[in-house]
Length: 339
Figure 1 (cartoon, rainbow, N blue to C red):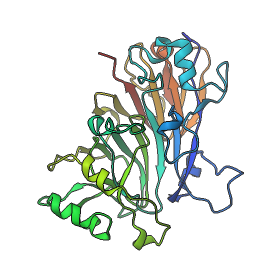
Figure 2 (figure 1 turned 30 degrees about the horizontal axis):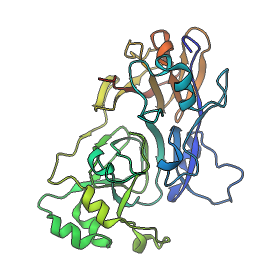
Figure 3 (figure 1 turned 180 degrees about the horizontal axis):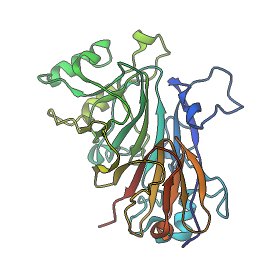
């Protein structure tokens, strides 16, 4: 795979009762086989989940859209190319790609939920730990996320409110606007609020424990709750909320560095070049505003618009060049090398 070029994957669209239609404006049109009026809330841009890890989606592996590797999954590319794709990072123990990258669009609040950490997920087969990060691409006036508990809330209050509308009153409500960034370690109670579009980077898991699903507020069909598992997965105490406000000027900055992945934001004017990390490591680029040209000296991809995602294999990383075609915001996502 060395020097073979860049990879664009076919996204997986996931219908959700809380989803809207704004992902269509990010290049994700409603599939023809779905009934008119179907709402979908997620576009899985880079995914490699096995069947036993799936809850919300019927399929979990994005496939290469074109070129010599067309139709291949990331798992297959890892098996064929190893470090030429991943660099010094490792796949999951099962041999799958170690990240899941999505776009989310909310017309209604998501469920109030918790994802397990590695210790709790290890208690049952089919559970997988999940740490995630949200970058706000767009937000309606007054939109917010729910993240962590208000100061002074006790575990006894949480248990009493679980499964009822009272849960929402215990959470911190954080107003959001375009360009904000929020990091959610495993075990953090949270809900993405209505009217928000985000890029989500996470460890590869679809395991979600719901504490409340806003059924009374939206009159939507009931879905299973997982109160006892959610309470068990909660991380005790009132941890700081890891959030970063939108930047007020052009440039590059690190948004988060975790044991699993890191994310940098690039705000670029037309004609600039993104100052990518110059290491022979895999990189994922997601355009959140404007458009860019991405190339590695062989097969440039031009006109990558907002919502476009490009995967740069480790073997092509040192020659990759990213040039904005207009004022552009770009996320650069990397894997953490194996110890």
